[in-house]
Image 1 (cartoon, helix red, strand yellow):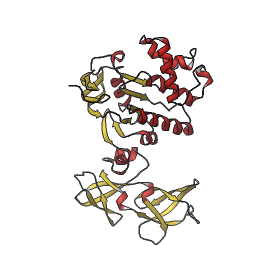
Image 2 (cartoon, helix red, strand yellow):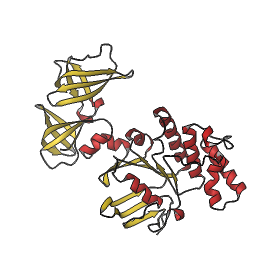
Image 3 (cartoon, one colour):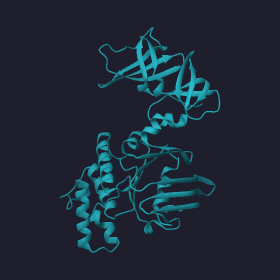
Image 4 (tube, helix red, strand yellow):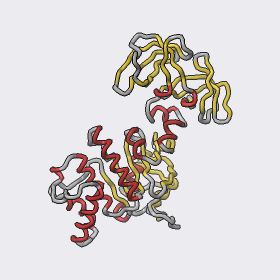
Length: 353
C-alpha cells in the first residue's frame, strides 16, 4: 500500500552480499518524508552501500526497499524517483552551467525550452542566477557543487541522495555550502539521505543520524541524542570528543547509575548495562578544571593550547589522561600545574565496558 506522503524510504530486512562478503547485514530502517537523514560511520561500515541501494545502483541480495510506499526492490536507478549529488560533482566540462543543470531533463525528452527554463529556476534556487552561460571551469568548487545540487533538484525527485558532497571543499567553504544545502532541503521539504564520514558535518545538517558500524546500525537518533545519550562506547567515542574512563557500578535504577570513580561516587545517566564493569563518558566541556585541593580528581596539566575562544588541556589523573576544554581565563593553567578535575555528573553518561 502506498504511503499517504511521497518521499519516505523504508528497508525491510535488506541484506547485501558480494560473494561471501556481507557488505550489509539485515537492515530495517524508515526515513520520514521531508527529513534529512545522514548515514555516518567509519570506512567500510556500509553507509555508501546503503545509499547505493536506495539509488538503485546496487540490488539487494535479500529484503525489500520502498520509496514513497512503492516497492522498488527490483527497479534499477533509471526507474526510481531519486537524484544523486556525487562527491566529484560529475559536471560535463564542455557544457555550460545551464546545459549541465538541464541535462537530466533533456535525457527524459523534456523540450529544450522547458528544460532550460527549469534549469534557470534551479540555478536561482541555489543562488547562481545569471551563471547559466559559464563553463564549470569558470566556477569555484563551492559553486560547482551548487550546480550539481541544482541538476539533481530540477528532476523533482522523491528522494535526494548526497554522497560525501563536501569532501572536495576546504573547511571554511564546507561550512558555508552545507548550510546552503540544508536551507534548500528545508525550503523545498525534500527527503534527503546524506552520506559523510565527518561527524561535525552530520550533526550540522541532520534531522536524524544513522550511525553504522560493521555493516549494521549502531544507533539512530538526533544529533543531540547521539552526543548526550550514546548507547555504547563506540558511539560515545565516534560522535564528538569523549573521555572514556573505567568505573565500577554499585546500582542502576530509573535510567541512572551510581558509579564509583577513583573512590568517589557519582549518580550518572546510564544506558542499559547488565554488569558491574562499565565506562563513564566524560565530554571535554563537562569537566571543570580547578586549583589543586578543590573537590574532584587530582591531576597534572601535561598540555595546554590557547585557541582564542577556548583553552584545550590534557590532564593526567589516576583514572587516565583526560581531554578538557575550558573557557579562556585571566590566568590559565600552565603545563606542569597541579589541578583538580570536577565532573558534571548530569552531563556524563555510563555505557557498557
